[in-house]
Length: 260
Image (tube, rainbow, N blue to C red):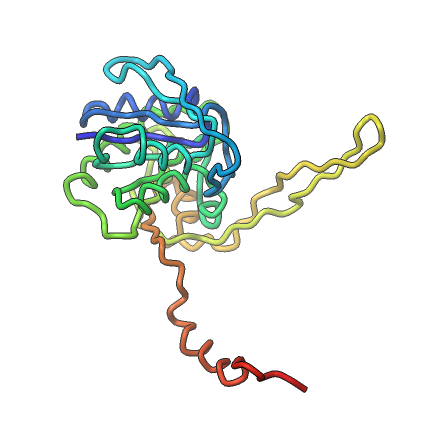
């Protein structure tokens, strides 16, 4: 059995080291990850330059990882199409430094690594540790391995992946596991304008998190209460409930309609 591990923090990040070595107890692990941090890259793929693969020494029993000069989605796509000798039983992306909650999943390279696995028919899981400093990935890695075993044995529905967020707390302080939906999050004050030494403007993107939906049923609410959040995501973004109402527009959208 083969497990593919990737991330967006880069191949030298502590989260992917802890995760891959813990998952090695379940089967063979292939580590294919970006050569440098690619956080918030979303589902970008590299189309206009070559992708190169560099072997990186790894602790036993894995032996080596593969660093790619691309995005998390590149890593999974390249692994599945060119680097692995067999399809993985599971794709795991993480463990990310910091949470991926609510609309973060649309920006996250971590989640996109799992999405790429799901697109290609592999059971897939994204894992993040909710914290900013002095993160200890050991419990998160152990919990992920327990969940990974369940997924391998039970499978996931087609077009479905899981987004796992774990609070950075001592295990005895975690209040349990919640099956959640995505909350609503946006970022304010996202653009900082500055001047370089020659007086030319440049911009930094960043911002402060603003959580608009902290209902206990959301991933944001669960993490705020010290619980592990597990959210099933699906590739199909269709808003089915709106289809009939949208169809009412059709009489005025045909050829020749809308003219004065």
